[in-house]
Figure (spheres, rainbow, N blue to C red):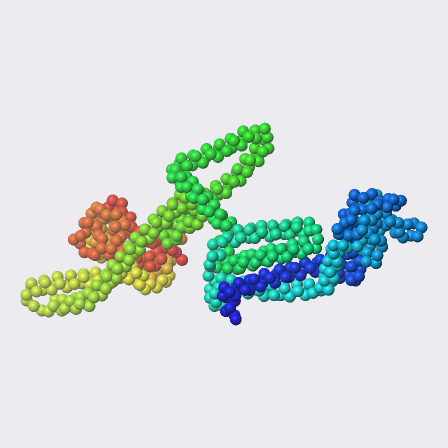
Length: 622
């Protein structure tokens, strides 16, 4: 039985029954209201019957006596009427009754107990009369029968109305549930109703309802007798049934679209709105495209002159009223202010983004929200530049890291066999032999193997320093002590190279946070470079000063040959001056010195001015 309601037969049956129940309920409600208007709930049955008779006599008198002149002295005889026999009596002041016959129809036979009586009939002459009538056509009897029926059914109307409401709710719920579905578990599917716009159906239904009610009201008003009223009541029920049936179908269509979640989208208003929106969007896109195709400068000039023309037009229109001109001017500025604020904010955002890029912030993406036109294009260009630079820097870092790892791995692989070579070369040199050639070859082998050993150690150290894997223990140190240690350690080597060392340092201590072993390695590398590459017979300056919150250590010497390389290139690994290609060294000294200085929170830099070589270290004082 449950699945029966999902079939076409079941839906049709429930729809028709619901429409019939609705019509019956409306008719019952109308009957109840009519009974209340006729006072069937407040008066007894006989009073109501008398009222019906009085109304019938009054109506007949208005029809028959409308053109008759009444005179109490000369009774008037009226032609026989098809509907009723009438007798009209005037009021007799002597006996206090309506006893003077003033008019009658030709077939009126006199007062009878079957007469319907209506007192106080007001004629056109301004006097009151009593009209007595006998029903000939049966219209009054028919009205009395309907009144008796209505009196008996006056309470049943409301019972039927309440039952109809309950049944109608049940039927409505069933129809809304089964609408669009073929089974309880099935999904709603759109049939022919999907193509019907809901708003159009609603307008048609409202028009049909208006026509039905207007016709029913008009026809019932002009009904001449009870039979005609019954006929039009039947026709009204049929029209109401069709109306309710159409209303139910409309509700089912709305329920179907609600289940499909497209109620609004299927309306004609929405379709017209979408079409209009699409047309306006195309027009707007065309205008924007045309505007964007104009170069920036002509576009700016055009906007400026357009604003000027609007201002000129406003001035010419309201030249007689300076107050309106001022008001329009202020309104224009209020409208332009948000535009200029927008441009200022977007330009500031672009400026901040470019500044961050210049300072190395390549990972921060530029916020392009709310940017339009050329501003967004410029932001996209900056983003592309940052992305390209980020990729390039990443590739460079990756390349440097791979180089460092390669150097570290190769150095470790060479260290073990090189140690054996050094040891055996030392043993060969210490062997007693008369062959001077073997002695000479073993000395060269030992010297070169030790040089290679130092190179490998430097490679390992610079690799660790570059990757940050070198352990550093920072403790408070007196920077002047390192200068004194350098003087003591390199006095003999400097004298052998015919160089004079001059130490410049303050008398008070300058304390810095440093690792003594790593700091001495920096001094050792720099002093070694001075011994190797400084010009003979010149002075070497080693100074310590305090500049603000920093301790500055400076090495200065004259190069033995012209330095044909920039300071930045000289700081790179495996780079030496052109003149020193045949001397000892591997080009790692300055690179190691720079990395070790930075690991100790210092700064290392070199300056080349002609033949003058200057290395500077800065450390924060404590």
